[in-house]
Length: 310
Length: 137
Image (cartoon, rainbow over all chains, first blue to last red):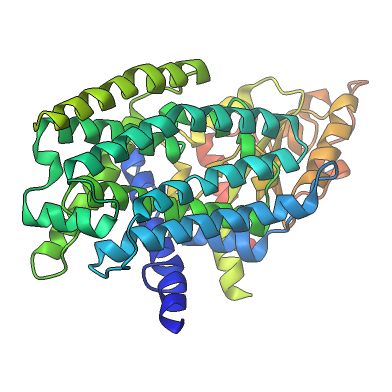
């Protein structure tokens, strides 16, 4: 029991994932600044933002809306992200949970933050938040099937294992999955799914800041918004870590391999950031056809290739 | 208190309220956020919603229609909030002081923490004003 609480709250869970995610979020902002020939924020900037929102600012409740659901939604978002983080990071740290089928659980837990955002946005009673919430719903509907096909491809590739630990061990025994044609195709699909899950720029229409002024988060202020920031930091770490676990061999913590582990995470975040900086925001219709037609097509081609052993 | 105040100073998010402006000050404010002046190195971001703002930048002359909207925006902001009046119109009324639609300079309507005069003020002047605001708050 105590060990489980430690896993959830401190080491692979809340504290560790939040701190690492905050540093990755700084890395993202710094790379964005360098792409635009700017200097960028200092390294502790995500922590300043978070503690300012948590400790200094006032939380305002919307007049027309449901205050209880409005405040509980960010807590659920943090819970879902942390829970998914524990399930993803424990196998990565070579601690077996003994739970066969955790991939399916991770898949469901990763959608909890998005659903919480939608519920919180609709509870705020703001029309722009409602627009953002409906866009987030359409986005979930479009990328979720693709993400499921991506996970199905990994499961087929490693020989019908449904737990992350066996998938990582299968890659360590053989070669990493990304070293084949189908692996590269799955990597492309996975990167775009993560981009949409994190709501980074080509797919950031739920929180389009110039268009509907942060959309789903428009009414959040103070500590409630700090919880949303915390969720975003955690998701920014665990989703690249999930991709590394599924396709790139996972982490090893001995000697030079620590450097490799860091480089893998940084490489995935760098790709996400560069996609974000070189693309305009697409319309929701374009995003749906992008995922439903093109990404599903690539995922199915990858599945066929896997079936033929490439 | 020291830690809280430090975090607050290091991460000021700015909401921009333009009154009946001639758009010169708006352009100079946007200039501050471009690569040349880059206010993000001080942790300053432009946000779209007043709920996320720590600083309310007000520019342009405030006429009778803007007045109630400015008060509404100020009341909707989560406290503590700092208010900065930019440009001659925001500080004193400038050219429009005698106008029949003019509803008083910004500090007659809401409390103001810093003034950046100029018509329009240069981006360097705006940055200097914000640095002074941060040092004195």
